[in-house]
Every structure is written in structure tokens, then in C-alpha cells.
Length: 211
Image: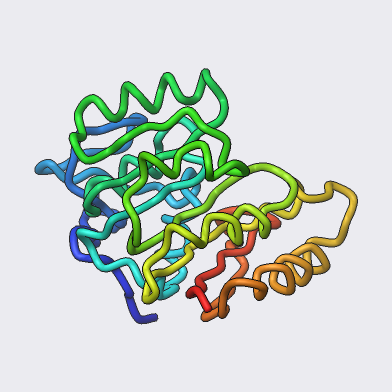
């Protein structure tokens, strides 16, 4: 398997086991060795995409818009290797945790906003970001990606996770993923799409670029 790891993400040994890792302050009780913190793919869909060898297009030092940052588990790893990282989270409780995570990371900017309403944070997020990383637990995940395409540079990347059960708990996940891909193609060209088992059931990782 070929690694497509951004600069600032490395494979490191923790207690004899190799893990993806970034350099930064610990956030969620993850193992730390020599300033490097293990990146747990079971707790991070982006981590699972990198473990699967997907080429996310993330290079290190990128300007990132992170949609659905939750309490900052994955956003903290992204901020460790990226440039300015704008982290959008809708739930106030999770956003409080995200603020705590951001205190030790000067390039992580938490925004208590709704990713379905990009106009509410357009005045804060810089234009032409290198990547939109999306991990939202809501219906209309493709629509969120399409409406946030305005922030991406022409050569930028969408790195999205599709949660089948968030769209329709009763539907076949493959049908949900097919609908997502169809809807996404209104604004993006899909470069890669892979299921995230065994790390996350009924999730699809998608990499795309704006049309």
C-alpha cells in the first residue's frame, strides 16, 4: 500500500505498534512519544482515509475549512500539520471542547456555526482554501459540500466522509453513497471513493476537486 501522507504526518512507533502521528499537544488521551501523538483511525474518519492509503491531496501547511469539527479530535490533528484551520461546529457543547483544543493551537479557529449556512461564516474564512474537510452528521451531506465549494481554490480538494445512517437509517448504505456521488457531481469531480471499514461501518471516504 502506498502512503499519501501530508507533510507533518508520519508513521511512528508507540509501544511497539506503528501508528500515524502528528506533532502537537495531546487531546483525547492518545499515546504520545517524543512530542508526536498517535492518530487513532477508529476515532477519526480522516485518519481512517489516510490509513486506507487514500490520496487526499492534503500536502501540509494547507489552509483548511473543516466542517463538522465536533469536539476537535480530528481537527486537532489537522491543525498540527496544516496552516490556518477554520473549524465549524454547530453543537454548543462540542464547540466548547473545540475551543479548549484550540487554546494550544494558534492556527485553529473554532466557529460555532451551521455548515449548512456558509453565508454565516463567509466573512471569517479566507478565500481560496486548499481543502474542505467535511465530517457532518446530518441529512443533505452532498448539499453541504456543494454549498461550501465557494471557499475552495480552483485546484483545491474536498475530503468528505459520508455517513449513510445520518442520511437515512433504513436505506441501504450503497444506495445512499450512490445518491451522494450523483448530487456531489453538481459541483465536483470525484477522484476517489472508498469504504472506511474496518474502522467505521457504513461510511464512505470521498476525495473530489471543484469543477
